[in-house]
Image (tube, rainbow, N blue to C red; front, side, top):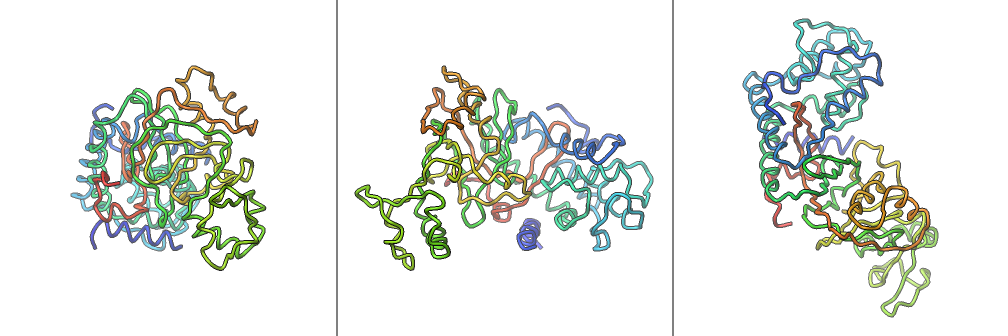
Length: 410
C-alpha cells in the first residue's frame, strides 16, 4: 500500500469509530522519573511547546534534521507493529505486551533505551507514552486507546514521507513571511501569533469539517467587529437552516435570526415554504448576543471564500481532540487575547481588559487595524522543534495522500 494511502486509511478509520542537533539525540526523552500523572502530562505538553513558529526557516532546518533521523529509523527496519493484545495497556499493567510497547517507543525516540525491557508499565513508560500522544495531537491519557493504538501502527516510511512533503510546504512560504503574522494550521486546528520569529501566543481552534473545508490562503487582518451581526451564508441556509426549520419551526426565533427580503423588509418565518429552497433567496441575519454564532467578535481579512476568524458560544468544542466542526471559518479559543494582540499597535488602548469590556458591553463596534497583520492558513501535518521533538497530525483533508504542496491556486 502506498505510504500516504496508509495514512489516509488511518484517517478514515478514525472518522469512523535552532541549533545543531546530534541525530542520535533527536526526539529523545530526558531520563527523568515523574512523580504522578499530572507531572507526566505537563512534561509531555512542554516537550511539544516551542517558541519556533510552524512556518519559519528554523522549522525548515528542524524538519531536515528530523528527515535524517527518520531515514535512519527506516534503514533500521522501522518499528514493529503493535498487536491487539496491547490495546488497553496503561500504567500499573505487568505483562508481555508492555515490552513491545517499550520497543516501539524506543524506536521512535520517545523512550530512552536503557538496555532493559521490563514488562512493568511504570511511571517512565507512562511519561513516554504521553509524550507520544502529545506529539500526535492525541488526548494525553497514558492509555493505549483506539486512536493511540492506530497511530502507533503508522509505519515509519509513512512518517518519513510526511516529513518530506511538509518540508516542501514550509519552504514554499517562509521567504514571504513578515515580522508580525498569524498562522492557522488546519490539521492541528491551532493558531500561532508570531512576532520577530517567536510565537507569542498559541490558540486552540476549530476549523472546517471535511465537507466544508477551511481554505488555504494568505491575506491581512484589517478589521475587528465587536458584537457582530451574523449574516448567514446561503450555503448554510440551504444545507442547515432549512433542515432545522423543518425539525423545529421555532428555530429562527430561538436563535434570534431574522429574515429580510430584497427591499430590507423583515419577513415572518411562517410565510416561507420550508419544504422548498425558497428561503435561499432571502437574507438571514442573527442579532448580536449570547446565541450569536460568532460570539462576541469577528476578525476580518479580505479573501474570496467569505471566511474569517471568530468567537463562538460553543466553548466546549475546544476541549475535543478532533476539532473539525465549522463550515470553513475558524473559531478561536481565548479570542479576546488574540484580538488584543492584533490591536496592540493601534494608538487606542486595546489591552485585554479593554477588549473584554467591549465584549461585555454588547455594543456593535468596528475597529480597524492601523497596521494590518498578515494571516496565513496552511496545511502542515508534520513539523519539528529545536529540541528535536517531531509532531504529526492526521491528513484530515487528504492533501498528503494527494501529494499536494502548491496551494497557490487557492
